Structures are given as structure tokens and as C-alpha cells.
Image (cartoon, rainbow, N blue to C red; front, side, top):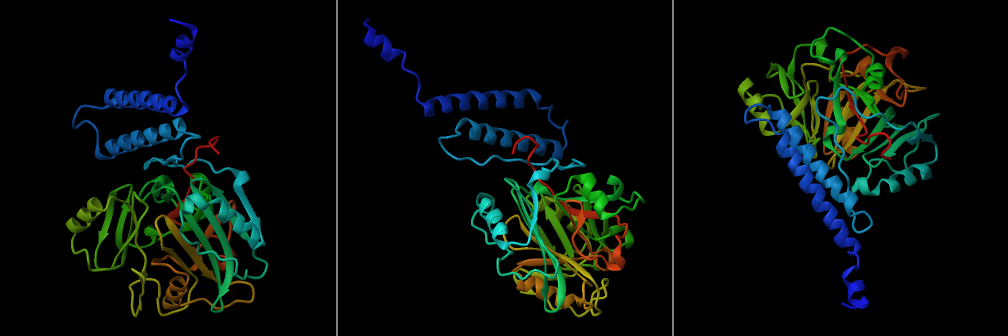
Length: 380
């Protein structure tokens, strides 16, 4: 065999073949690990099996992403375990604030892959409320933009959130358990959870109405009182008007069928499937009177809009529940739900309360709703 033939036989694989070979080896290793670590049938609960399967799927996806780097783009998947009491710590360097809409436009542009063609609630035409500024945070798993503007004469503190995975939308209970008897400030719970953005939720311990689900477990089932708001593992907000679920068995079946992880029990529903709701009466919230308000809405997949409306600098008007609904509808929310209001209404980010809380001080509450980065530190 001559030298030319030897050189031909020693020619290395192409980069693509090398990457595919490495990928195949990694997938085989992961599959073997999964088989060896699987417990006997019936030994693991549904949540453990689901977490194992998701971890395996994510690991394979991320291995493919690494192996094919430079050849094709595969987005890595990061997911926060459902039972985790804290999320990954956000990178302090990725928080920012500005009064310049051009800076926010740059942040939005940098999140193009995450947004995946979805339009933002934020617009460069927004006129900031007096002395207000934009706050933002952005990494490959989360985009948050907050601002304050005057709408229909009301001081509205707004927050837009786009996340990569449903596990980044979370609920935290004071004392980290249902009915713990502990009350904490929103800001305290947000820091404990490593939240990027936090909002008040429904203050479930203050009343005994509605449906309460936490970490997939049904704790309270008082039907016929309130509109229901469920969140599932995919990060979808599912709104069910009062009366549509007629028994605890139906609620439990709904939780299973829709992969519900937690719920909120306040309301009413403000916007449902793109239709503005006209609310005449509702059991809680003093809908016909004017109060500081709080709400959450959504339009596209994993894309949320949160808002509080409070008394503020030279603004001594706050809305009725229908006026709140009109604002969420005009902002483009396809679905929207009212959260607890009054002194409870609060938005928090990066160590700051963003809105002007009633009486100038936080109220200790039993729960918060928060958004977190799924990106482990050191992966930026």
C-alpha cells in the first residue's frame, strides 16, 4: 500500500460526521443512565416520573445543541424543578434601568429568539409617568420590561414578561407551605425565591372562597363563589368562570386533564378569549367601587402582562373593576384576571417596589406570583 493510499485512509471525519458521532455516543450514555436509574414499576410517583422524563428530554436536547454548535442552531432548554423552593439566582449585571426608549428597543431586539416573532406590549410611543423609568432584565430564558404610564387618568404600573419555559412562572406561599399561618412581605418572599419580577397574588389565607391548588395538590374547593384561574406546567393561564365546575370531582379531573400546577382564587375574569367582560356583581373585590387594583393578563404563548393601578403623584383616582378590565383589554390581553387589590397590590423587581403601594408601606400577605430565570449562573 503506497503513501497516498495510507493518507487517504487516515483522513479525519468531516465536522458534521464527528458531531453526529459524538451526539450518538452521548444519547446512548444518557439512555443507559435513564434505564439504570429507573425504579421498579409503581415505585415512583407521577411527579417523579414526569421530572425524570423531562430531565432526560432536556439533557438530550442540550447535548444535541452542544454537539452541533457551529453547524446548526438548537435552542437549549432550561427548566426549574416544580418542587424547587428557589429558582436560579438572576445575574445582577443583567438588570438595568433607563428613561430612553431606544435602550429598551435594543433589549427587545436582543430577545428576538426568545420572543420568536411575538409583538411586545411595550411600545416606544409610551409616555412615561412623571419621574418614572423603565426597568428591565434579559437573558436567553426571560425578558422583563416594567414601566409606569398614565392611562385614562390612572397611574398604571406595567410589567411585560416573556419566558422560555412554563416552569419559570411560579407561586410562593409564605412559610413555603399551605396554611402555615405565617405572613410575609412580597419583597421578602421575592428575594427568598430569587424572583426576577414578583407580584401579589390572591392572599388566599385572608378568605375561604374559591379553588386553591399548589404543587398539583387541591387544598380548597369552595365552588360557585369565584371565577377560577389555573396555571399548568406549560405556563398557560386557564380561566374558568364560576359555576362551570360543579363538584370537587370535576375540579380534580380538570386538574389532571390540564396538567394544572397551581391556581389563584380572586377575580373576576376581566377578559376571556379576547372578549372584554362586563361585571355587574362579584362576591369579593368591591367591583362597583374604586380601589387600587392588580391584575395579570396574557396574549401569546408564555407572554404575560401584569399591572397595578394606585394612587400616585397628583393622581388621586383609582378604577372600578370594569375600568381595570378596559385597560387590560386595550393593552391587548387575550385573557386577564384580577388579583387582590388595595394595599396588597404590588409589583417588585430587583430590590424595588415599582408601584406606589397604598399607605406607603407593604402589607404582609400569604403568597406571591413570580417569574424567574431558568438559566443556571455561569451559563450566560
